[in-house]
Image (cartoon, rainbow, N blue to C red):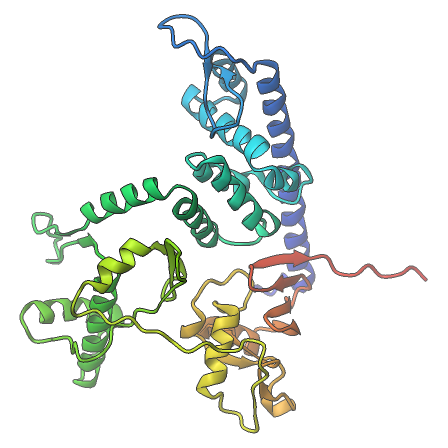
Length: 408
């Protein structure tokens, strides 16, 4: 921070930024309402696919109305976008209004920006009505604060549950996309080449583990390169047989599947997967499926020491999933376990006073003036040194308006 600026200037800039964002969101909602009014005026049941002349076109999922094609073209000119862009915008608007009623209620109230709702709508269009309703129920109340990854997980789960045939077809197509490319014909002046590929998750986890293991060995042997460089070097060592993977160790793959269900969940990535995919992985003689004991997340663990025991660290990771700083998505399993009230200031090492923080946000909390209170297990209220408050829980983050001061 320069000597000519201070905390008051920073607070003013952040306040101005939030005000301009609110103006933008209100204007976008006005455009959305106008678009929907236009669609109502030009809704049609005419599905004639004649070569010439106007006709209705489906732009959203089953159950949403059809709209005159010519009307959408004219709407595009008013929006200042191409006809294809107008079709995508109208499709998302209709999907939200007619197939995602809970999401629409949040958008109409100004609680959920259209751009976030549009991300959901563009991915539910291919689902049957029951699948769209499932997503609507699961995400509407938290859509304003959860990230794209969690939204996509819920949408993927809906496809697996309500359109298993399409999910199986997609699974087979995905398996055919597996590849591993070494672009040896595009060598950089430094003598490097790009490598990329698509692997099965168990194979990817094994590769990641052997590269991490070899990178650590190179450091112990005196290599001073960065971790990224050592991992790249490990690929060459693996190709030359200088690095091997110990298959006596179980694959770090944790799966949960309930009896009679067609859907399982991979704990490594928290993503839903088809039971058929799990069966295929289990068919690999080298694969080991890890079944972990159930941990009571409501149990209160307390120890009379500063060090956090493994059972408490694992409980924190299962409760919070990620670093608990606002909007952070780093996995909890890679985080430090922080004492909300510092241990040296009387804070205890227990379930109600510990939470995962990634190393960067741990330093920010310790040295950067940020603080947080534990409101409930898995729910935290953060405060910036400039004043703004943020509520973080297992669903994600949302800003909190500070309480208004009473006039004297």
